[in-house]
Length: 268
Image (tube, rainbow, N blue to C red):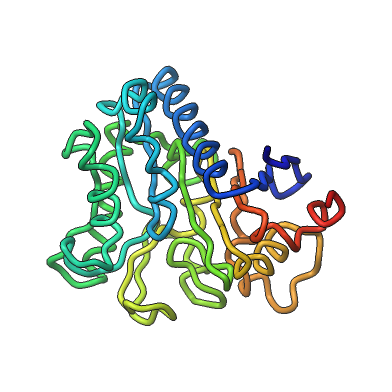
C-alpha cells in the first residue's frame, strides 16, 4: 500500500511499494481525471511525455479501463518531443502510438503531434500555433489567470538531474515566459534537437503528475520536494519549478525514488 501525504507547498506525494502498485494507482488516477474532465466540459486534454511513463500507462488498454474510458473524447498532446522522424525510435510520438494510442479508439484528428518534416524552430512554432487554434475554438481550455492553455492533465517524468519535459538544469529554456512552446538545439541528452512546453504552460494545467522510479532519482526527488535550500540557483532543479498556480500537483514514485525524502525516512 502506498505511503501518501500532502506537502504544504509541493502537492501530494505517493510512495508505492513497487512498480505494479504505482502503475495501477497512476492508471486509476488518469481514468478518474478523464471522467471528471469529460463530465465538466466534454473533453479530456491529456499531455504525455516519453520514457518509462508510457509503460506505466499500459494498463489503460486492459480491462476494465479499455471499456470504461471514453477514448473518443480524448485529445492527446506532448509536453516535449525529440525532433526526429515519427518513425524513429527516439520519437515520443512513436513510443506512445506503438504502446498505447494504436490500441485504443482515440481519433487520429485528436492527436496533436509535431511536424517532423521541418526545422526544430519551425516545429516549435507550428506546434504552438496548433494549440493556440485549439484554445481559440475552446477545444482546449484557457487559463483564467495567465496567457496559457489549461490542460486537464500533464504527465511528466523526471530525470536523475531533475529535468522535466525537455527543461534541463540551468538551460535558457527555463526562463522562456512568453512562448507556450520553445525549442532546443543543444539538449544535454541526445538527440540534441527538441521542442518542449515552457514552465508557464506546465504550471497552468488543472492537474500535473510527476512520475519517477529508481534509486537514481532519489536525490533529485529529495531536492524537488523537501524543505531545503537549493545548492545553487532555483534553475538548477527544473522539477522544483513545477508548481501549478491553480491546479493539483501529485508525485508518483516507488520506494527507491522516494528513499531520501524526509517524511519517508521518518516513516520507515
